[in-house]
Length: 323
Ligand code: SF4
Image 1 (cartoon, rainbow, N blue to C red):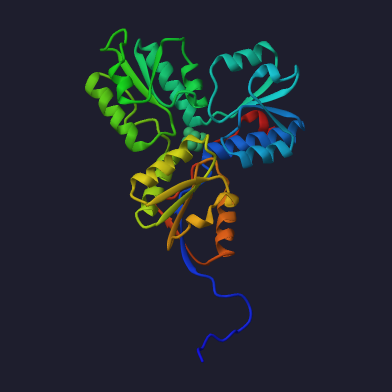
Image 2: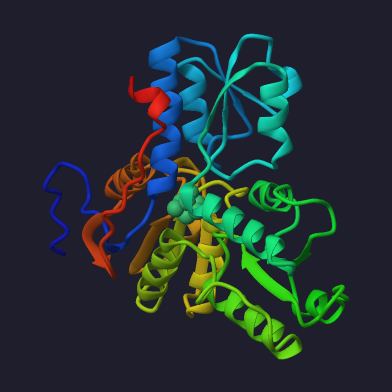
């Protein structure tokens, strides 16, 4: 007789190792933007209108909606006398101008690191330079940066082909700025192509890619090298989240997937001994916790956090909310 004795209880779970990338999830700009909406709701009471998703995460947006935030596309959906907040991605100049014209009370939740890019662009324009913006067409941050200056002052490029096609008014008076949430490696290549074509072009010391995007990409690279599968939590319209999936793939992991939450995991694909987990800068840590819990319900989990750097940056809140 064999020794397959039934001892009662559930069968043992298969082992799996989860490696959490650190840093991951919320950055200082996202925390500030969400706090602005929360504080505005506390101070003024609902409804508070928010132009565009305050940050690109459906869980965050749904949670704020539940507390009385109303997300709208444009200011013409805001009733007279209402309170409105502009998202972390920044807005074209005509948006606050229109709010002033309509005498709306508004708060600007633009991340200070996006505002810094706006200031750089204005500075270059004042110095008589034509500006090249490296970024993704259609992203709200790009629309906001383009909208800081008159039409034609900034050329948007996404690829080396776009750079080859540029025909600036004076090739000796050029500057560049970048979207804050791009791939660090891809952007370096584009900056090199710009410098090759326009040797006198001026720009930031490296790029305008923010500390949070850079750190999350470094962290996901480090876990990808030792994982069989990488799961990145976030929304598909979040630029920095999508970049993390690309970075993981390029770092050599067999499979990398963007998931919006634990219920999106396709367990038939989790044939892995080591699973790396990260989250975009607009994803709350609760999403990561839920994924770990879902793994624990199926596997005997060994949990490790792989930290490439620590972050302690915070941004001040608008003074109007302090009183
Ligand atoms: S990802 Fe970077 S630029 Fe965007 S909100 Fe966070 S800190 Fe600011």
